Image (cartoon, rainbow over all chains, first blue to last red; front, side):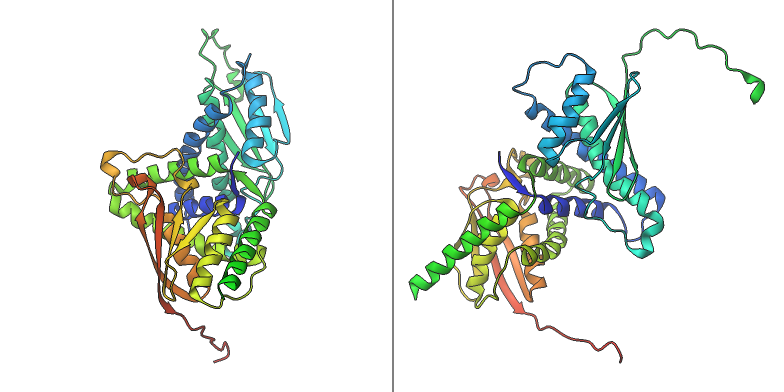
Length: 178
Length: 190
Protein backbone atom coordinates (compact mmCIF):
# COMPACT_ATOMS: atom_id res chain seq x y z
CA UNK A 1 0.00 0.00 0.00
CA UNK A 2 1.27 3.45 -0.77
CA UNK A 3 2.80 5.56 1.94
CA UNK A 4 3.80 9.13 2.50
CA UNK A 5 6.35 10.53 4.92
CA UNK A 6 5.04 10.89 8.42
CA UNK A 7 6.56 14.35 8.71
CA UNK A 8 4.41 15.41 5.79
CA UNK A 9 1.27 14.39 7.64
CA UNK A 10 2.46 15.97 10.89
CA UNK A 11 3.11 19.26 9.15
CA UNK A 12 -0.31 19.19 7.56
CA UNK A 13 -1.92 18.51 10.91
CA UNK A 14 0.12 21.25 12.59
CA UNK A 15 -0.91 23.67 9.90
CA UNK A 16 -4.57 22.77 10.32
CA UNK A 17 -4.31 23.43 14.04
CA UNK A 18 -2.52 26.66 13.23
CA UNK A 19 -5.23 27.96 10.93
CA UNK A 20 -7.83 27.26 13.58
CA UNK A 21 -6.01 29.15 16.31
CA UNK A 22 -4.69 32.64 16.90
CA UNK A 23 -1.10 33.01 18.20
CA UNK A 24 -2.24 33.24 21.82
CA UNK A 25 -5.31 31.09 21.95
CA UNK A 26 -7.86 31.42 24.69
CA UNK A 27 -9.38 28.40 26.36
CA UNK A 28 -12.57 28.94 24.42
CA UNK A 29 -10.73 29.07 21.11
CA UNK A 30 -8.88 25.89 21.93
CA UNK A 31 -12.13 24.17 22.65
CA UNK A 32 -13.66 25.38 19.43
CA UNK A 33 -10.61 24.31 17.42
CA UNK A 34 -10.74 20.94 19.16
CA UNK A 35 -14.29 20.40 18.03
CA UNK A 36 -13.39 21.25 14.46
CA UNK A 37 -10.44 18.86 14.50
CA UNK A 38 -12.66 16.17 15.91
CA UNK A 39 -15.05 16.59 13.01
CA UNK A 40 -12.21 16.30 10.50
CA UNK A 41 -10.93 13.19 12.26
CA UNK A 42 -14.42 11.75 12.32
CA UNK A 43 -14.82 12.02 8.56
CA UNK A 44 -11.44 10.41 7.99
CA UNK A 45 -12.01 7.64 10.52
CA UNK A 46 -15.34 6.69 9.06
CA UNK A 47 -13.89 6.30 5.58
CA UNK A 48 -10.74 4.52 6.67
CA UNK A 49 -12.71 2.01 8.73
CA UNK A 50 -14.74 1.19 5.68
CA UNK A 51 -11.64 0.64 3.58
CA UNK A 52 -9.80 -1.42 6.17
CA UNK A 53 -12.70 -3.77 6.88
CA UNK A 54 -13.89 -4.55 3.40
CA UNK A 55 -12.21 -7.98 3.29
CA UNK A 56 -12.93 -8.99 6.85
CA UNK A 57 -15.63 -11.20 8.25
CA UNK A 58 -18.33 -9.51 10.31
CA UNK A 59 -17.48 -8.54 13.85
CA UNK A 60 -19.23 -10.57 16.51
CA UNK A 61 -19.55 -7.87 19.16
CA UNK A 62 -18.44 -4.45 20.26
CA UNK A 63 -15.36 -5.74 22.05
CA UNK A 64 -14.13 -7.27 18.82
CA UNK A 65 -14.62 -3.96 17.06
CA UNK A 66 -12.70 -2.14 19.78
CA UNK A 67 -9.90 -4.70 19.49
CA UNK A 68 -9.84 -4.15 15.77
CA UNK A 69 -9.44 -0.39 16.36
CA UNK A 70 -6.62 -0.95 18.83
CA UNK A 71 -4.71 -3.38 16.66
CA UNK A 72 -5.27 -3.28 12.94
CA UNK A 73 -6.79 0.17 12.55
CA UNK A 74 -4.17 1.90 14.68
CA UNK A 75 -1.42 -0.10 13.05
CA UNK A 76 -2.53 0.83 9.55
CA UNK A 77 -2.60 4.49 10.48
CA UNK A 78 0.22 4.98 12.91
CA UNK A 79 2.37 1.90 12.35
CA UNK A 80 1.92 0.88 15.98
CA UNK A 81 -0.79 -0.57 18.14
CA UNK A 82 -2.59 0.92 21.11
CA UNK A 83 -0.42 0.11 24.11
CA UNK A 84 -3.05 -0.70 26.65
CA UNK A 85 -6.75 -1.43 26.57
CA UNK A 86 -8.92 -1.45 29.65
CA UNK A 87 -12.65 -1.78 30.04
CA UNK A 88 -15.20 -1.76 32.82
CA UNK A 89 -17.29 -4.24 30.80
CA UNK A 90 -20.15 -1.76 30.84
CA UNK A 91 -19.46 0.10 27.66
CA UNK A 92 -16.46 2.18 28.71
CA UNK A 93 -13.07 1.47 27.18
CA UNK A 94 -9.76 3.15 27.94
CA UNK A 95 -7.23 3.12 25.12
CA UNK A 96 -3.74 4.17 26.07
CA UNK A 97 -1.21 5.29 23.47
CA UNK A 98 2.12 5.85 25.19
CA UNK A 99 3.83 7.51 22.31
CA UNK A 100 1.35 9.10 20.01
CA UNK A 101 2.94 9.85 16.67
CA UNK A 102 1.27 13.22 16.24
CA UNK A 103 2.51 14.38 19.59
CA UNK A 104 6.14 13.26 19.67
CA UNK A 105 7.18 16.26 17.62
CA UNK A 106 5.50 18.76 19.91
CA UNK A 107 7.41 20.78 22.41
CA UNK A 108 5.50 23.62 23.96
CA UNK A 109 7.19 27.02 23.95
CA UNK A 110 8.12 28.47 27.30
CA UNK A 111 5.45 31.16 27.20
CA UNK A 112 2.85 28.55 26.41
CA UNK A 113 3.71 26.13 29.21
CA UNK A 114 0.54 27.05 31.04
CA UNK A 115 -1.67 25.99 28.14
CA UNK A 116 0.57 23.09 27.05
CA UNK A 117 -1.75 20.42 28.39
CA UNK A 118 -4.76 22.02 26.77
CA UNK A 119 -2.86 22.45 23.55
CA UNK A 120 -1.91 18.79 23.69
CA UNK A 121 -5.52 17.88 24.22
CA UNK A 122 -6.37 19.91 21.12
CA UNK A 123 -3.85 17.87 19.15
CA UNK A 124 -5.43 14.74 20.57
CA UNK A 125 -8.81 15.69 19.20
CA UNK A 126 -7.99 14.50 15.72
CA UNK A 127 -7.35 10.87 16.75
CA UNK A 128 -10.45 11.13 18.98
CA UNK A 129 -12.43 11.85 15.90
CA UNK A 130 -10.73 9.01 14.06
CA UNK A 131 -11.88 6.56 16.71
CA UNK A 132 -15.40 7.90 16.91
CA UNK A 133 -15.71 7.96 13.13
CA UNK A 134 -14.37 4.44 12.73
CA UNK A 135 -16.72 3.12 15.41
CA UNK A 136 -19.63 4.90 13.82
CA UNK A 137 -18.72 3.45 10.44
CA UNK A 138 -18.82 0.02 12.02
CA UNK A 139 -22.22 0.64 13.53
CA UNK A 140 -21.33 1.61 17.08
CA UNK A 141 -22.20 5.07 18.27
CA UNK A 142 -19.98 6.41 21.00
CA UNK A 143 -18.42 9.46 22.49
CA UNK A 144 -14.67 9.70 22.76
CA UNK A 145 -12.65 11.88 25.09
CA UNK A 146 -8.93 12.33 25.38
CA UNK A 147 -6.68 13.02 28.30
CA UNK A 148 -3.00 13.79 28.13
CA UNK A 149 -1.08 11.72 30.62
CA UNK A 150 2.34 12.90 29.53
CA UNK A 151 3.75 15.11 26.78
CA UNK A 152 3.38 12.49 24.08
CA UNK A 153 1.18 9.94 25.83
CA UNK A 154 -2.55 10.11 25.70
CA UNK A 155 -5.49 8.13 26.87
CA UNK A 156 -8.73 7.90 24.96
CA UNK A 157 -11.92 7.15 26.80
CA UNK A 158 -14.55 5.56 24.63
CA UNK A 159 -18.09 5.49 25.96
CA UNK A 160 -20.35 3.29 23.92
CA UNK A 161 -23.86 4.63 23.63
CA UNK A 162 -26.11 1.64 24.07
CA UNK A 163 -29.40 1.56 22.29
CA UNK A 164 -31.45 2.70 25.28
CA UNK A 165 -33.04 -0.32 26.99
CA UNK A 166 -36.03 0.44 29.16
CA UNK A 167 -34.42 1.88 32.26
CA UNK A 168 -35.34 0.43 35.61
CA UNK A 169 -36.45 3.23 37.90
CA UNK A 170 -33.33 4.70 39.43
CA UNK A 171 -33.09 4.15 43.16
CA UNK A 172 -33.63 7.28 45.20
CA UNK A 173 -30.41 9.03 46.02
CA UNK A 174 -29.48 9.41 49.60
CA UNK A 175 -30.25 13.08 50.09
CA UNK A 176 -28.97 13.40 53.62
CA UNK A 177 -25.50 14.42 52.38
CA UNK A 178 -26.66 17.43 50.44
CA UNK B 1 28.30 17.61 -20.67
CA UNK B 2 24.95 15.93 -21.29
CA UNK B 3 26.10 12.73 -19.68
CA UNK B 4 27.26 14.71 -16.67
CA UNK B 5 23.73 16.10 -16.23
CA UNK B 6 22.26 12.64 -16.70
CA UNK B 7 24.57 11.22 -14.08
CA UNK B 8 23.49 13.88 -11.64
CA UNK B 9 19.84 13.09 -12.25
CA UNK B 10 20.39 9.42 -11.58
CA UNK B 11 22.30 10.22 -8.42
CA UNK B 12 19.51 12.50 -7.22
CA UNK B 13 16.89 9.89 -7.99
CA UNK B 14 18.83 7.36 -5.93
CA UNK B 15 19.17 9.85 -3.12
CA UNK B 16 15.42 10.47 -3.22
CA UNK B 17 14.66 6.75 -3.06
CA UNK B 18 17.12 6.19 -0.25
CA UNK B 19 15.77 9.10 1.77
CA UNK B 20 12.17 8.01 1.32
CA UNK B 21 12.98 4.50 2.50
CA UNK B 22 14.67 5.97 5.57
CA UNK B 23 11.94 8.26 6.91
CA UNK B 24 8.99 7.21 9.10
CA UNK B 25 5.88 6.73 7.06
CA UNK B 26 2.12 6.78 7.43
CA UNK B 27 -0.54 5.47 5.11
CA UNK B 28 -1.13 7.66 2.09
CA UNK B 29 -4.86 7.13 2.52
CA UNK B 30 -4.77 8.78 5.92
CA UNK B 31 -2.97 11.74 4.41
CA UNK B 32 -5.20 12.19 1.40
CA UNK B 33 -8.44 11.67 3.29
CA UNK B 34 -7.35 14.12 5.97
CA UNK B 35 -6.44 16.70 3.39
CA UNK B 36 -9.78 16.14 1.74
CA UNK B 37 -11.63 16.68 4.99
CA UNK B 38 -9.63 19.86 5.61
CA UNK B 39 -10.41 21.26 2.17
CA UNK B 40 -14.08 20.48 2.69
CA UNK B 41 -14.02 22.35 5.99
CA UNK B 42 -12.30 25.35 4.41
CA UNK B 43 -14.84 25.50 1.63
CA UNK B 44 -17.63 25.41 4.18
CA UNK B 45 -16.01 28.16 6.24
CA UNK B 46 -15.15 30.54 3.44
CA UNK B 47 -18.09 29.71 1.17
CA UNK B 48 -15.91 30.96 -1.62
CA UNK B 49 -13.59 28.98 -3.86
CA UNK B 50 -11.13 31.83 -4.45
CA UNK B 51 -10.71 32.47 -0.72
CA UNK B 52 -10.19 28.76 -0.10
CA UNK B 53 -7.49 28.71 -2.79
CA UNK B 54 -5.64 31.51 -1.02
CA UNK B 55 -5.92 29.75 2.31
CA UNK B 56 -4.64 26.44 0.90
CA UNK B 57 -1.64 28.15 -0.60
CA UNK B 58 -0.93 29.82 2.72
CA UNK B 59 -1.12 26.53 4.58
CA UNK B 60 1.25 25.07 2.04
CA UNK B 61 3.68 27.94 2.56
CA UNK B 62 3.84 27.34 6.30
CA UNK B 63 4.35 23.64 5.71
CA UNK B 64 7.07 24.29 3.16
CA UNK B 65 9.00 26.43 5.60
CA UNK B 66 9.25 23.43 7.91
CA UNK B 67 9.65 20.83 5.20
CA UNK B 68 12.81 22.31 3.76
CA UNK B 69 14.47 21.86 7.15
CA UNK B 70 13.42 18.25 7.19
CA UNK B 71 14.73 17.78 3.67
CA UNK B 72 18.12 19.28 4.43
CA UNK B 73 18.38 17.26 7.63
CA UNK B 74 17.46 13.91 6.12
CA UNK B 75 19.04 14.05 2.67
CA UNK B 76 22.68 14.88 2.29
CA UNK B 77 22.63 17.48 -0.44
CA UNK B 78 25.27 19.67 -1.92
CA UNK B 79 24.55 23.25 -2.86
CA UNK B 80 22.70 23.63 -6.15
CA UNK B 81 24.77 25.19 -8.89
CA UNK B 82 21.84 26.43 -10.93
CA UNK B 83 18.11 26.92 -10.80
CA UNK B 84 17.58 23.94 -13.09
CA UNK B 85 19.51 21.82 -10.64
CA UNK B 86 17.23 23.11 -7.90
CA UNK B 87 14.35 21.89 -10.03
CA UNK B 88 15.83 18.40 -10.14
CA UNK B 89 16.38 18.34 -6.39
CA UNK B 90 12.80 19.47 -5.73
CA UNK B 91 11.41 16.82 -8.08
CA UNK B 92 13.67 13.87 -7.44
CA UNK B 93 14.44 14.30 -3.77
CA UNK B 94 11.77 16.61 -2.31
CA UNK B 95 8.65 15.10 -3.80
CA UNK B 96 10.04 11.59 -3.54
CA UNK B 97 11.00 11.92 0.09
CA UNK B 98 7.70 13.39 1.30
CA UNK B 99 5.06 11.94 -0.98
CA UNK B 100 6.87 8.95 -2.42
CA UNK B 101 6.04 9.93 -5.99
CA UNK B 102 8.18 10.41 -9.06
CA UNK B 103 7.95 13.86 -10.57
CA UNK B 104 9.30 14.98 -13.92
CA UNK B 105 10.92 18.32 -14.62
CA UNK B 106 10.11 20.06 -17.88
CA UNK B 107 11.29 23.25 -19.54
CA UNK B 108 13.90 24.08 -16.95
CA UNK B 109 15.73 27.35 -17.55
CA UNK B 110 17.71 29.61 -15.27
CA UNK B 111 14.55 31.34 -14.08
CA UNK B 112 11.71 28.91 -14.55
CA UNK B 113 10.76 25.25 -14.44
CA UNK B 114 7.70 23.10 -14.60
CA UNK B 115 6.91 20.04 -12.57
CA UNK B 116 4.80 17.27 -14.03
CA UNK B 117 3.02 15.00 -11.57
CA UNK B 118 1.44 11.95 -13.07
CA UNK B 119 0.46 10.69 -9.64
CA UNK B 120 -0.68 12.98 -6.89
CA UNK B 121 -1.40 11.48 -3.47
CA UNK B 122 -3.31 14.62 -2.46
CA UNK B 123 -5.93 14.14 -5.12
CA UNK B 124 -6.57 10.46 -4.57
CA UNK B 125 -10.30 9.73 -4.19
CA UNK B 126 -11.17 13.28 -5.24
CA UNK B 127 -13.65 14.56 -7.75
CA UNK B 128 -14.49 18.23 -7.95
CA UNK B 129 -18.19 19.03 -8.00
CA UNK B 130 -19.45 21.52 -10.58
CA UNK B 131 -19.55 24.51 -8.23
CA UNK B 132 -15.92 23.96 -7.20
CA UNK B 133 -14.48 23.51 -10.68
CA UNK B 134 -12.14 26.45 -10.07
CA UNK B 135 -10.77 25.01 -6.86
CA UNK B 136 -6.99 24.66 -6.86
CA UNK B 137 -7.06 21.48 -4.89
CA UNK B 138 -3.33 20.91 -5.25
CA UNK B 139 -2.56 24.57 -4.56
CA UNK B 140 -1.10 23.34 -1.30
CA UNK B 141 1.88 22.08 -3.31
CA UNK B 142 2.44 25.54 -4.81
CA UNK B 143 2.53 26.96 -1.31
CA UNK B 144 4.94 24.29 -0.15
CA UNK B 145 7.33 25.08 -3.00
CA UNK B 146 7.13 28.81 -2.31
CA UNK B 147 7.74 28.37 1.41
CA UNK B 148 10.53 25.86 1.00
CA UNK B 149 12.42 27.77 -1.68
CA UNK B 150 12.08 31.05 0.17
CA UNK B 151 13.90 29.47 3.11
CA UNK B 152 16.82 28.75 0.81
CA UNK B 153 16.92 32.30 -0.48
CA UNK B 154 14.81 32.01 -3.58
CA UNK B 155 11.64 34.00 -3.91
CA UNK B 156 9.46 32.18 -6.40
CA UNK B 157 5.97 32.36 -7.78
CA UNK B 158 4.14 29.09 -8.32
CA UNK B 159 1.01 28.43 -10.23
CA UNK B 160 -1.04 25.40 -11.01
CA UNK B 161 -1.25 25.22 -14.79
CA UNK B 162 -2.95 21.89 -15.20
CA UNK B 163 -4.56 19.51 -12.78
CA UNK B 164 -5.85 15.98 -13.22
CA UNK B 165 -8.90 17.10 -11.27
CA UNK B 166 -9.69 19.60 -14.01
CA UNK B 167 -9.66 16.80 -16.53
CA UNK B 168 -6.03 17.22 -17.61
CA UNK B 169 -3.71 14.30 -18.11
CA UNK B 170 -1.13 15.43 -15.61
CA UNK B 171 -0.84 17.96 -12.84
CA UNK B 172 1.56 20.70 -13.85
CA UNK B 173 3.07 23.33 -11.61
CA UNK B 174 5.06 26.26 -12.92
CA UNK B 175 7.74 27.72 -10.70
CA UNK B 176 9.05 31.14 -11.60
CA UNK B 177 12.16 32.54 -9.97
CA UNK B 178 11.51 36.15 -9.03
CA UNK B 179 14.49 37.07 -6.99
CA UNK B 180 17.46 35.59 -5.20
CA UNK B 181 17.33 36.88 -1.68
CA UNK B 182 20.47 38.08 -0.03
CA UNK B 183 21.03 36.90 3.46
CA UNK B 184 21.19 39.80 5.84
CA UNK B 185 23.01 39.60 9.08
CA UNK B 186 21.92 41.91 11.82
CA UNK B 187 24.21 42.57 14.71
CA UNK B 188 22.51 41.98 18.02
CA UNK B 189 24.61 44.46 19.94
CA UNK B 190 23.65 47.56 18.05
